[in-house]
Length: 268
Image (cartoon, rainbow, N blue to C red):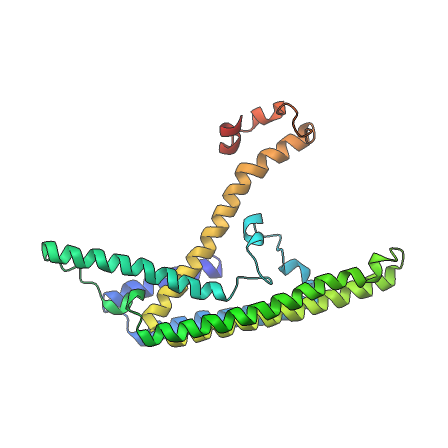
């Protein structure tokens, strides 16, 4: 079981126990702290490995194309943490309204514990989260500008004018990768600080729900990305292996007929 999957299981069990009054807030807070520390350890370990191959973290081979397309500086945008909270607040608010109307009409008590709902964020909490959101976006923009400058600097490298200058090219690329590693470490620092600030603002139950939703989203993107590649790229590989890529506008390759994936069934 991956660490992400283990965290999801632990968070779900902890929230279920808490709602049945069999799990106190101190243990829940301890679990949340452990998950944050696990991310810190991951970021530290990754920073130590950037000297060997920083580029691989910007488009990991173990990710699907969908996941890599959504990456920012080797991970998710810190501002997306806040967007998850906003999404949870809206979703929970709708749920609360439905419960309220149901209780008015049928006098039904569902035993819901208000502390477990993200819709119970106070005005003070929302103000702190909003201030954090503004701060994080500003930090993201600064890192993005630095990355853009590094990418533009590639045109000034020896590779652009002296392809045969192997040593000079290697040194320039090593320097570029080193700078990208520094930026990735800076981005990881912003991610970690944002995560810590959010956990400090939320109650233990709210923090657990926030982490659980974020990890579910991450795992869902991985599953969606792999499923899309199976439908789309699997059949392309079959076609290319058999006869090569057909010319644009030509008749559909006969080898597509041997592919039984859903994408090809729909597009035959």
